[in-house]
Image (tube, rainbow, N blue to C red; front, side):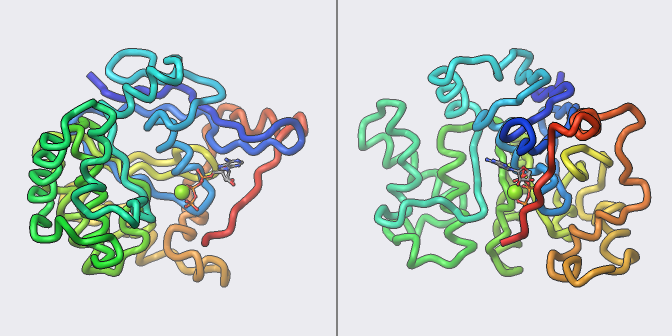
Amino acid sequence: MPIIELEDVSKLYGFGDAATVALDEVSLHIEEGEFVAVMGPSGCGKSTLMNIIGLLDRPSYGTYMMNNRSVAKLRPPRAAKYRRDTIGFIFQNFNLLPRLTALENVALPLVYKGMTLGRRTRQASDMLARVGLQHREYYYPRQLSGGQTQCVAIARALVNNPKLIIADEPTGNLDSAGSRLVMELLSEIHKTGNTILFVTHNPELTRYATRVVYMHDGAIVRDEQTVIGDVAPTARRVMYTVPATTVEDDLAGVSALMNHLPDAEPAATMSLKEKTRKTGKARRSKRSRT
Ligand SMILES: Nc1ncnc2c1ncn2[C@@H]1O[C@H](COP(=O)(O)OP(=O)(O)OP(=O)(O)O)[C@@H](O)[C@H]1O
Ligand SMILES: [Mg+2]
């Protein structure tokens, strides 16, 4: 049974002529235990998809079931509780509080659970040990390397024991050694039974995934089962065979080249975006990468 079931989920930002179609009738099922990489050019809707799956945002249209229940309809306080108990988030910029130690950062989500300070500290300490940073408990984020900082953020995401981990470009600010550290850790976590979704612009990191979902203009244009250890076939093809066509492509990196994938065409049926475009009600705006 899938833990995540999205059916025809669309997300529009803004209204009328200024509306942006960030997700365009996306359907996606994710089974428990999958390790899914999400790739695609800047502005194609990856973060929007992560935020909807992670209950940080709501679909404009369509249905979202998690563990067979319609979570998108939960009232905000219940959604927040459900999110805390079920989902761990990891972000590109780590989002740690700079004035708290590694240990205090990891213990923070437990405050909501009403645990005593002693229990919180013990649990956070165990979690830091699990990510290999027991010797850094009293360090502040600025005293850690990028890779270590992200490992602390991963420990914090795991401290509530969530089944689903959502990581939006977890290695986006890391060098290759830091990226490796973080991806190896996510791999370990995956082996212990967690379901993991991560966004990446780096085709090399598809080696860690069991499945790769490719997005373009708010839609899923390809969905590939992959072998752990191998770069996913489409990512490999984009990496080695599709030439850069513009300076912008060069700057944006390999993921921008996915714009030129031969069969990255919209579905045959008329999409929400086309419908809105036809009626002149929506306009896509493309953000430049930071
Ligand atoms: N809060 C918002 N208000 C208005 N438009 C938004 C908002 N968030 C995202 N968008 C727009 O929705 C589209 C999808 O954005 P999203 O951030 O999901 O893309 P992305 O694939 O994560 O891009 P990147 O690789 O740069 O992180 C973009 O056109 C973006 O400008
Ligand atoms: Mg994003």
